[in-house]
Every structure is written in structure tokens, then in C-alpha cells.
Length: 265
Ligand SMILES: Nc1ncnc2c1ncn2[C@@H]1O[C@H](COP(=O)(O)OP(=O)(O)OP(=O)(O)O)[C@@H](O)[C@H]1O
Ligand SMILES: [Mg+2]
Image 1: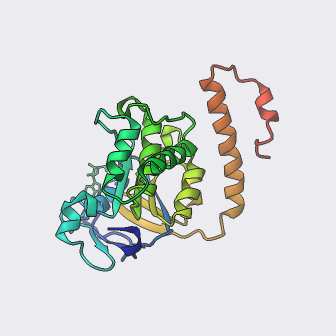
Image 2: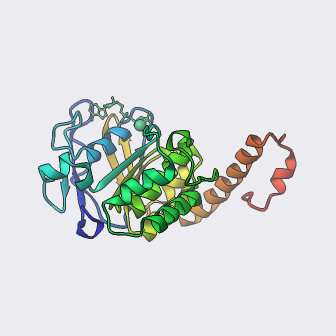
């Protein structure tokens, strides 16, 4: 399904680990929406995005169902990956094909009537905006790091697959520049769900799904109420990014880091 045909994905409730109905009637996701999913380890976050990815019809452990544009998805959409409007990228997503980045992207582009060479360059350039470790078209897919792979697949889903719905399961741990990713996904009007343990990411999405015991217990819409705190947390995050970079570079951490202007008051 192409982006322009997608209007809405709806999640209908299932039951928690104890068989009790979940705390929502319907969660709808439209182009441009950003949603985060938070909850402790084992609370069912990955199960939630997996339900979406497999287009569950009450046939998974949670009992949830998914509607696309208000209807149960066609068999075609369930079976044929090319027709599925969803890309799921997880911490474990790896590309095992032994190809160069350029060849991998070209194969994906091939079926489409576009200027393949320009699109490869554009996709690699976009991926390089998401990651600090630069990707070159001649690198082998199997030699990319976890963060590089995820960045490339996000850029690929945006520019080549033109997938309207992206599900990202804890990709922030891979050293991806998350604010850039969010800004870009919004720019391209994607519907995105982030499974995350990262407070800043959870705060910069439009809605926040809270999970417990395998079920959704609340869907928060902070609106502007967290705006001041987002600025504050963004400062702390920038400080931690800098700290992480210095530690990675082998620096000893002295108090001079506190003079860094990004340190929040
Ligand atoms: N509603 C449910 N009913 C029964 N089992 C469930 C339900 N939801 C999730 N589970 C199961 O619970 C286990 C943990 O769920 P899941 O992996 O989704 O947790 P998680 O929140 O992603 O944890 P982590 O933060 O560690 O990644 C899985 O085996 C999953 O299949
Ligand atoms: Mg998980």
C-alpha cells in the first residue's frame, strides 16, 4: 500500500495477561501521528507493535485486532510484504544478505520508476543524518553496525519503501539521533510508534501509551502541558549525549563538562 492510500490504522483492544480487557476502546493512528509506548520490562510493548506488524485479527496471544482504513486487512496485505503498509525495525533487525549498501538499496528501488542512483545517494545521506557513524554506499550491509543498519532501514522505509507506518522498537539505544529521526518522520508525514525507555523520546511524541501486564492501561495526550519540561529534558539529554561521546572517546570526565552551555540549570 502506498502512502497516499493510507488514511488510518486502528487497534482494537484485547486482554491482559490475566484475561482482563484493556483500558481503551480504539487507538487510531493517522499520517503524521507520533506515539510512544512505555512500560516496564515484560509489560508487552513489543507484543503491541508485533500485533500491528502481523496485522493481528484476534489470533495472537493478546487478542488484539488491527483495521486498515476502517476494514480488516485483505489477505494480500497480510501475505505480501510489498503490500504491507508497515515497517517494523527492532534492536535485532539485521540484513543478512551479503550485498553492498548501494546494491541493497538499488534492488529495493528496482521495481520503481525512479532515478535509482540519485535515490541511493539521497537515502544514504538521510541515514547519515540519523547516525554519527557515517555509512558509505560501498560498505557491505553485513559490516554495518546496529545503529547504522537501523538508520539505513529507517531512511529506506521513508524514501524507497514509502511505507506509511513505521514501528520502531527500542532503536534509540543504538546511538541514533532521535530528535532528528522524529523531525524527519513528521516532515514526511509518517505515522510512527516508538517503543521506548527514553524519557525525552516519550515526551516529544504526540501521545504516550502506558503498558502493564501485557495490556494498555492508559493513552496520554500531554498536549502543551509538558512543553517546558521537554526543553529542560532536552538539555539534560544533550548533556548526556556529550558525556557519552567523551567517554567513548576515552576521555576522563572532569568538572569542565559542567561548564558546557548545554547543562540545564
Ligand atoms: N496480553 C498478553 N497476554 C499474554 N501474554 C502477553 C501479553 N502481552 C505480552 N505477552 C507476552 O509477555 C512477554 C513479554 O512481552 P514483551 O516482550 O512484549 O515485553 P516488552 O514490554 O517489550 O519488554 P522489554 O522492555 O523487555 O522489551 C512476551 O512473551 C509476550 O508474548
Ligand atoms: Mg520489547
